[in-house]
Image 1 (cartoon, helix red, strand yellow):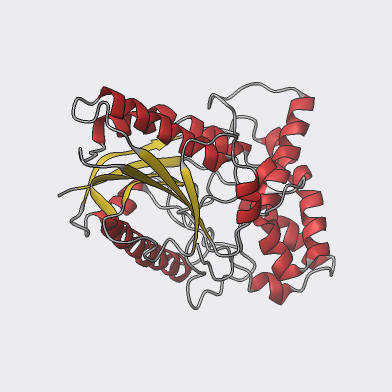
Image 2 (cartoon, rainbow, N blue to C red; image 1 turned 120 degrees about the horizontal axis):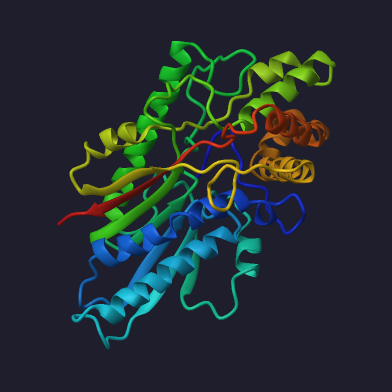
Length: 360
C-alpha cells in the first residue's frame, strides 16, 4: 500500500518489530481459518487445465502472519485438488506473491520464510489500490488487516487535536468516507481484472457494527491512547500543537453494508460470504475472562508493543524518534488504566470476513 502520510509496519527482527508483535492479528486470522478452508473447498473454481495455481497476499508486512495465512490456503488448495474428480492426479505447482508497500521490509520477510516452503515465492511491491498483476492471472487473493488503511489522508482534513475522523465534524467524516469509497472502488476494479473466472478474493479487515456511526468512538482504543498521550506532551511543551493538529491517521473502518454497496457497482463479483467476527481484548478464544493483576499488566505491555509495531514509524516520522519513544513508554500505562476501569468492554474493533467470487 503506497500510503501518503503512512509508513509500513516496523520492520526488522528486533523487539519492537511487527514480526514479534502481531499476536492480535494472528489470533483474529486464526478465528477465520475454518471459514477460509470452507471458501476454498466450496467456492473456488480451478480449471482442469491449470498447471500453476497463483496466490497473492496483499498487505503482507514482514511475517510471520502472512506465512500462516498462505500455508492455510496452500493446504486447503491441496485438499481440494485431491478431492476433485476432474483434478485428481494432475501435477500442479503453487506460486505465491507477497505484496506490500515499496518500503516494506521484504528482506526480513524472505529471510524468515518457513523451511521447505511448498511454493514458489516472489515479492510484488506497490499499492494494492492499483493493478499489480496481469489480467486473468491470479486464482486466489488474500488480504488480512490491511484494507482499513486508506491510500492517503483525505484532502483538506483539518481535525484539530484529533488523529482520526472519530469525534470529528460531519465534513471530516464525509471526507474519510469519500476517500474510502474511491480507494475501495479502485481496489476492487484492479482485482476484478487480475482474478481468473471462478477465483476468490478473501478479505479480513477492521470494520464497525451497523449501529456504530462513523464518527463515534470505537472499540479500538489504540487511537485514543496515542491521541491522549500526544495531548499530554503538547501540554508539557514537548510536542508542538500545530504538529498534533496536522497529524491524521489514514484509517477508515467501514460497516459491511458500506463495503457491499461498493462491490455492488462492480458486476464481476458475487458476495457469497460477508459477516462480522467479533473478538475481545485479543483473547485466543474471543471470550471475556476475569484476569488477575499480573495478567492485566502483561496485556497492557503487549498492547503497547503491538501499537508501536503498527504506528511507531508513523509517529517517529512526524514527531521525531525521541517523542515516539516517550509516547510508547507511556502507552502501557494508558492501556492498563483502561483495562482496570473497563474490564468487560472490548478494546479492539470487530473484524469483517468477506469472500468475493469472480463470476464468468
